[in-house]
Length: 206
Image 1 (cartoon, rainbow, N blue to C red):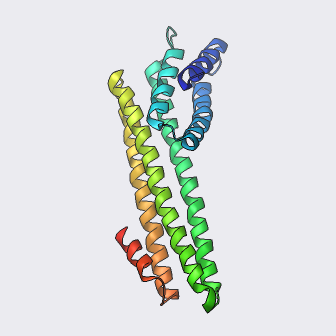
Image 2: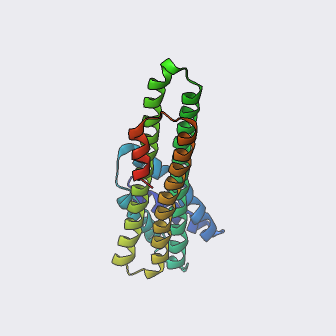
Image 3: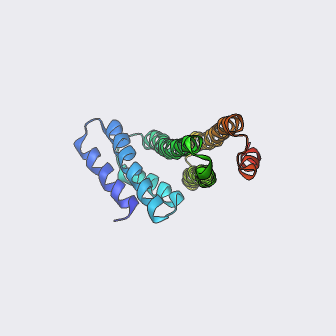
């Protein structure tokens, strides 16, 4: 079953109950989309397509009902952006935590072990950078999916959700720079002989 058909059937089932329809649709979208996003990341599938199909499924599930379809789509798209933003933050924070732990081990290393520890810190910082870029790309794909659906279905009400996704991208980029600046200040203060190449790499991202 496609993503579209899955959410469509879920929405139709909620409508049939007639109870807290809007609230239950949003709750279902959050839960289903969160899992769909994680599955798509693992499978390397386009989040733009997944996002488009999810919105399409919601609208088709509401077809021929008296519920405010555009308003529910708006709240659903906002919820979808929030789901991806939350996932991105959690993923980046976990990677940053690993960097901090690796850095601490460097400071505790003996002189003989420092070379290996520096390589691990370098790799951990690169992992943080790559993770940030990947999550920014995911947010961009979600924004494109909502924007594409908004344009094709003439649902301009969804444009504010697109902007929220763009704001989340900007926040993610700013957060990475804050992490990098803190990291740079710390290693320059505590490790005078630190890998010069890594320091220059960090400065490049600021």
